[in-house]
Length: 269
Image 1 (cartoon, helix red, strand yellow):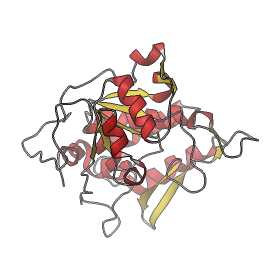
Image 2: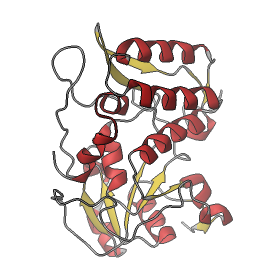
Image 3: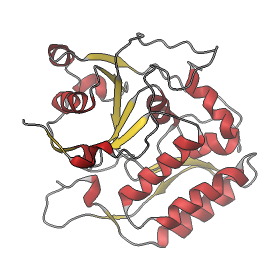
Image 4: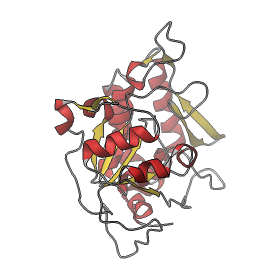
């Protein structure tokens, strides 16, 4: 498929970029995936309050693409919800959404809208009651609240939250929206090729979930792209409310660890 670059491609969400493999350097760094001198690209859908592994991948690439123009997933997913830890156990924060009618489930992240705004007050109250005793509540809660109240669009909110926390953690990768980069693009491995060609990347950093199923390494190699996988291992850190629970929304580690969360982005935990 022909790749068409949009003029706004030169206007990334974050203009801070790095030519190094590791955006944040530290003497404790010990990356398990292969080192390379090539420009590294990573990508992911702009989900609501993603887990720490999302930010780990973002910190270990040069260019990160928000897949805001891809199809919104059907059924239960982590697109519009994630888990936090409350005094009564783990619970989901879920955004009620309204989808375009008559599209048979085929619509993009950009086309999804809030069903209403009532959920915002509920999420704010739940987060406040769950984390008001956390060491960094006074730092993180205002950031979360500001973004929640500032946006009337699902994608603007999710990207706004991710950007806010990425900047808080001093993640210096260049971040770009797919919708501002390409007007036409392929799917699966072809999308990777299209994005690498559009950004000049020669290495693709994939997650270890669905990526291992869908990535066609031979196809990528034929287009001069090296495939590597994230080596993220979830850390254990002090948590409120009983035994440690991994893979929660990034809010949990930020409330409990603050800027010290950066050390989990530097190397295997």
